[in-house]
Structures are given as structure tokens and as C-alpha cells.
Amino acid sequence: MLRFINMKAPLAKALFLFGLLLALSGASWSLDSSAVIGGEQSLIAYLNVGTAYRQLMENLAKIDIPESGPIKEQLQNVVRIALANFTRTKGRARVRLCTCNQRILMNAIDRYNVDHATPLNVLDYDALTGGKYLMDPAECPDKGKYSIEGDLLKHGEVSCSIHGSVAHPKDPSNGKNDSTAPDVFPPSRDENRTPMMP
Image (cartoon, rainbow, N blue to C red):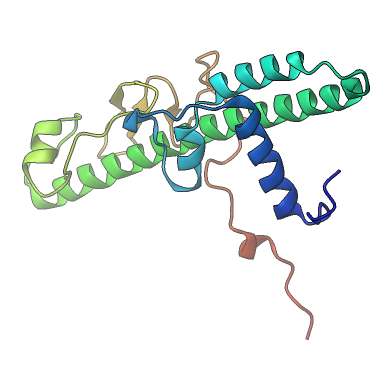
């Protein structure tokens, strides 16, 4: 197809497909700053993937060359897979952000309890933000509500109404505890490496 691009290189292939997706879709960029997840997901958050997907499928349907049938099918499959990956990545990023918020809240409450004679056993944002413990109240990216489960002085924890707690996550699609959920923070690549033999 294009001989000047080395399509065996994964980066070149990814950039080519991403450029093709943007060119065919005329994707619009979201101006909603609350949609930004952070880290490597920031590009995905700004891209209005749903609109891009619909526009790309409409443009692919307009291609009317007889030889383009298999090409159209392949492009549609690539777009479907890419959209599923974008959606899955965005969902994982929201769960990670909620888990980080829960850990930040637990640390702020622990620091408050160390500094004060009367321990904080409820989620009191005024006490936490008024001092040196939190700059702003933590908010779940999926609009869940944070609460305290159990006694914080013993084995209590901060929990989200949508995602559950760090120790007991919920599946956001059905609201039930998901004990089979993978760890939100998987071990780094270095921890998975097999030690080299001397």
C-alpha cells in the first residue's frame, strides 16, 4: 500500500492507523477538563472516541470501490477493537483514580488521628481540608460517594459507593463485590522478571 512506511515497525503501524482513524473520522476534541484521567490516558480522555467511531463508520460506508469490500471489513474490525481497548483503558483509569483517592483519604485520616487527641472516625472533609491534611475534598471520577466502613481505629476503611474499597472492590457494572477482580496496581515489570543466573 504505502511503500515508504516500514509497516513492520509497531510504532509506525500504530501511528499510521491512528492518523487514518483521525483523518477519516474528523474527530472532535473534548473541551471538558473533568474528563481528563491523567497519565498516559490523557490523550484518550480528550479524544471524543464515540463521535470518532460513528464518523469513521459512516465514512467507511461511503467508500464505493468494488475492490474495497475486504479492506472496509478489516478497517471496521480494527476500529471496533480500538474502541473496545479505549473504553476498557478509560474504565481502568477511573478505577485506579478512585483507589488512589481512597488511599489518600485513609492517609489524611491517619495523619489527623496522630495529631489530635480525639480521633476522626467519620469522613469529615471540613476537618481534613481545614488543616494540613487535604487540599480539596476527594471526588470519585464516576460520581460515587466515599464513606467509612467499620471502625477506623481497628480495621475500618474508606469505601466508594460504586467501586467498593481497596480491600473489597466492587464490579461497577453490577454493584456486587468482585473478589476475583485483578489488583488495581499490578506488580511492576521488574518484579515479574526472572533473576539472571550468574
